[in-house]
Image (cartoon, rainbow, N blue to C red; front, top):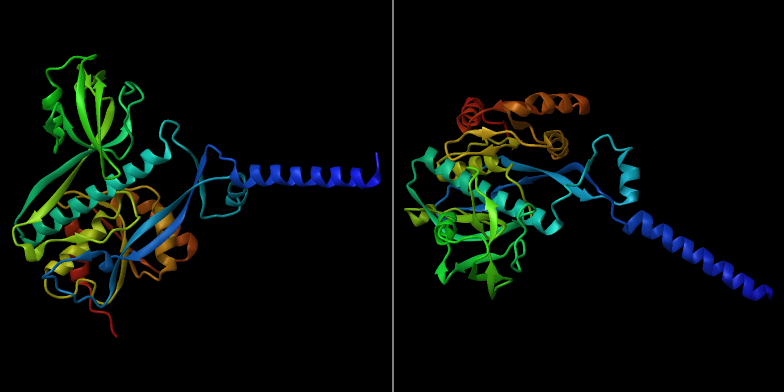
Amino acid sequence: MRPSRAKALKSGLYVLILAVIVYVVVYMSTPYMINQPGTAEEIKPMVSIPSGDPEEKGTFMLTTVSVSYANVWMLATARFNKHAEIVKKEPDRNDEEYETQQRYYMNSSQSNAIMAAYNKAGVKYGIVPEYVFIIGLSKDSPPKGDFHSGDIIRAVKGQPVKRFEDLGALLQDNQPGDVVDVRLERGGKSVDQQVELVEIKAADGARKAGLGVSVGELRKIQAADQAKEVKFADTRIGGPSAGLMFTLEIYNQLTPGDLSKGYRVAGTGTIAEDGTVGAIGGVQFKIVASDREKAEIFFVPEANYKVAKAKAEEIGSKMKLVPVKTLDDALDYLASLEPKAP
């Protein structure tokens, strides 16, 4: 073999090996995800109320966890990051279903936050169902139609579907194997198809006919006074854990004065219509994110307080951690504060 040809083959082999290494390290997927500190973001730009009181010398901040699908390089480096956590992916959920689920949780969180704030502020409102959409496909009873996570179910058997109850009522007299007309909305376009129903297991254990999908209902919370209508800016944030902080921002705008009293207030926790604050996951990452953004106060669900406190002590944070079980707990603490000196 001539030296020049041997050199070319050797160079080509090096390039091939390098390409394989790059693919394995950077592009090859793994069955793991990495959780680490996300952001602490000011809520006021996300929420608007026509007649809202704009006074807010401090700021209310929601907190997030950064979730990344890990490649080999990320797995290797994450082991040296004391604020990172490696977890296994859920095997039966794809990326599209995960993103749809997170958007649904965020929409529900915003609706609950509005209702909790309205109830506390004495604002009358109504709940208007808008549509039912597909979150995921059943693994136990796979659907026989062409369904995608995020599809809106507009009609079944020629009848409109706007609530959970509509879907159940329309299919209650059907049997598995029956074929029904289904109209979906996907990407702004109508998709009509005939779908064979499958056998599903109801919450009470009974067997009945269904589409073989899990669904969510989008509801609009409508104030009797349009000037108090709450509107959210579109964000790419998902999940239910910003409920408490959304509620504080909405209530602050609905009532006169400045609840923040000039402080940088971060926090986390789900919110129920009655103001109950629920536990969340990943509080340790949110502590780090809030400390980075110089938060002075952090509201934490009581069930998460022990983990939050341990993380705050580990990083030497000077934030005041305030455990809460209800919206009133957070409001009472804010009411007890002296306004921050300029």
